[in-house]
Length: 341
Image (cartoon, rainbow, N blue to C red; front, side):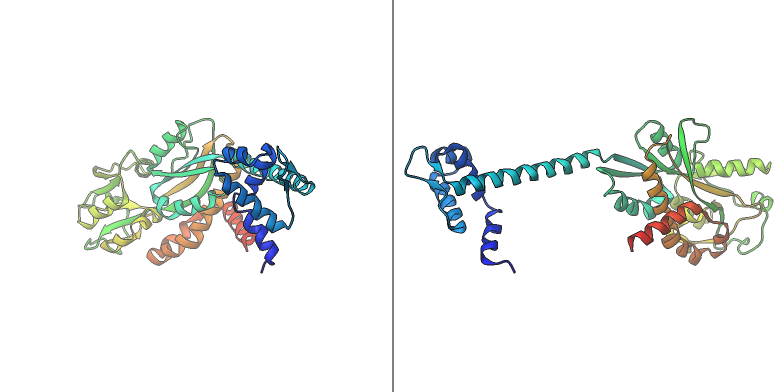
């Protein structure tokens, strides 16, 4: 509990009293001080009287014109001006430091945007002056990076053929086989050739997407020709088509976790061997935002390990052995967690 005198001074600091005092000191006139402050002369007189009563001293000699500052007023003015100057300096430093913080735009692939984006914004708010997270398919956010519309991307397309970029591996995940629930292939060990010759076609991710190109590359390496009849840009649309019995599909755990509410409408099982995977990277322009990239890697690894892997284990446990999270990113996440405790 503040003493009565300290409480009084504390209250004065949150009023116009001290501004009034300094204005009277400057103009040596209640009338001129009132005009400068936009107050009535009676308000100025009341504020000065309140201050004098609080301090227990008379601050001005009102019998002379212009009014004169008594020694106590001179002492108070010097102290206040010194304190206000120091406060102004500190405020200026705070503003300058805030101005030095970067404005950062991050592009995140759709399969991670829902689960990771809120955590990234929460993490980076204190490290940046402004942060925004945009989502989309890998080719779109990659083009945004090249066009300097975003600064950092989390993508399944590392842009290997593009110079002037820095790439940081985050994780690798396998493709899973998605079947209609009434398919005769459910829970059977099938081969790629059986799938390709199956009566239902593949429902594939669009060739515009990195996932679609990964599937193309896989079948090309196996020298298999796969007829493509149905394409879609999003996992939800792919799953809905499979659920309606229009075909089968290949997708990854992280893509599927976007649509947990409809996983029960399809059947999921391991894809045939040889298995192929999707890799996810953080990509920036060369050597830019190094400290932020380290933080993002750690936070993504933390979200994958703590929040997503348990859900993946619950829905498709056989895929866990084929999921790899960068060891350095996991170590960084552990270090940050220990430091926070």
